[in-house]
View 1 (cartoon, helix red, strand yellow):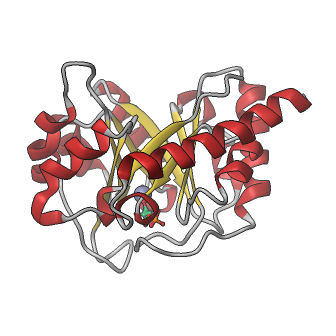
View 2 (cartoon, helix red, strand yellow; view 1 turned 180 degrees about the vertical axis):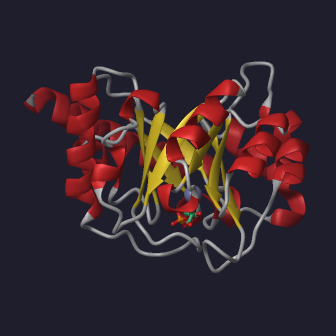
View 3 (cartoon, rainbow, N blue to C red; view 1 turned 90 degrees about the vertical axis):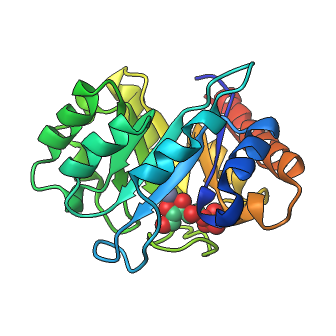
Length: 235
Ligand code: DX5
Ligand code: ZN
């Protein structure tokens, strides 16, 4: 297992009146992915942004150096029609909650058939057995460390053993599945999150609220990478 950790700033805490500039700024500050939270006031009690906004920020995700994927986190129900629209709008990854699809395997196949990487998102109380029959289809597992719907919540500590358990499942699968953690991620818990086995960390308020994007991303990445390195050394 490599010790490099991807950082995905969540636009939920960005200035929505200047979204393109915010995307450019976090990419210049070292973002590996742009985390794009989609909420429908039905699956979660909040309402955010849709495929038109995804399409609008897409040109801001490409620099001379790289094209940074948009990591679309669907907190909506149902999901299939929106999957097609987000693929069309330029998503690089689309993940959804198993509770929000009547046919999880079909939704995963739909994402991949559109040339997009597919992820499943598990809420803090969602058991891991929902991974049992789909792990061979997954490119990403996103573990929520808060209940979805809002930025700025506190990290739920019981996520740490869950990260470890999912890491064991991924390693046993032999597949290159990213393990992303979302909610309440800060520089002061990133080492424990990395050490538990996460390789991709979403952070919204910890990056956008302080205004120092480069320092915030660097601090989270440094801590998480140190945690991952400690894990690798122990193995
Ligand atoms: C919550 C969203 C998260 C959120 C993270 O439903 O999925 O991506 O924006 O924000 P912070 O890092 O502030 O907890
Ligand atoms: Zn999210």
